[in-house]
Image 1 (cartoon, helix red, strand yellow):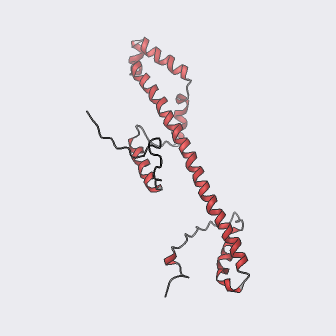
Image 2 (image 1 turned 120 degrees about the vertical axis):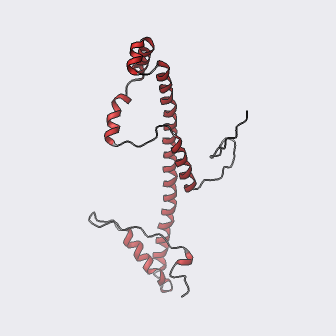
Image 3 (image 1 turned 90 degrees about the horizontal axis):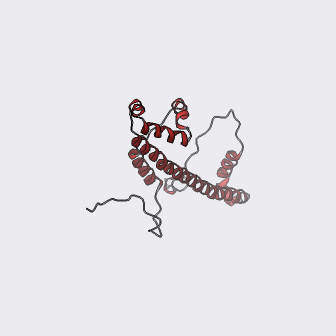
Length: 182
């Protein structure tokens, strides 16, 4: 029997030049995966702390308790699960821990990639500021004065009491006031 399973993420091992994914597509795929993860959910801090003690038991203790369930019908009846059920749950914990490790590694990679992107943009911004500051010394580049003044104002450290101003997005070229024909 043949099944047609579509893999939404290309395999880097078989595809030598995978097409980069857009952030929006990745978010959509992550949300789709999230909906398929058994018992996925968010816990409050209190709920997390409440579950931590039993969730942090030593593996040997858990194995010994599974052995007790397997050795005694009374213990099995009292806990309401078989030793086989508990062994499967333990296997699930180990397998999902591998997913957790991989997601943590992926998050670190995404954080690093964003740092590289911000750095690259920041270097260009600093270059732009430096070049613009030098150009405004010449009257023919006076149109850069408001931009240099704004960059200078924004580069100063903020006082704690100043309300945080939202950072304006750059206007697309066709909407920029200096380039529009009125």
